[in-house]
Image (cartoon, rainbow, N blue to C red; front, side, top):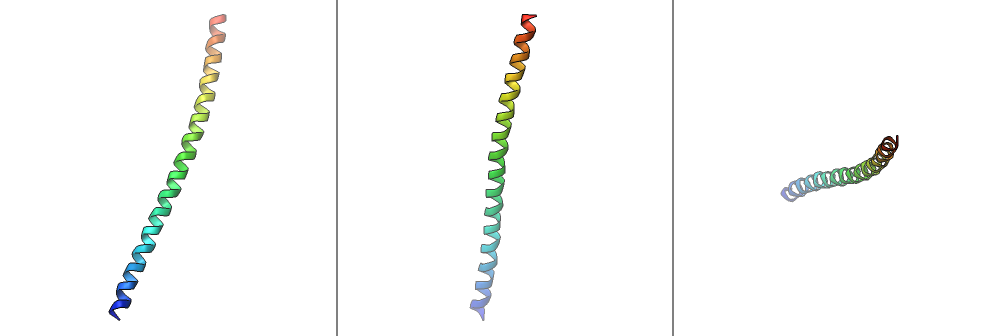
Length: 59
């Protein structure tokens, strides 16, 4: 009886810990994808602004 209660408490804690780890992994993956996307967009914007700047100096 007492052992069942102890096992029940351990079981609940393990599920909560696993859920927290899963959320952390999902958040990390989202962050990596977001950083990659922002870098790509930033590079394209930088190229476009450089092109505009070069065209303005030629005029």
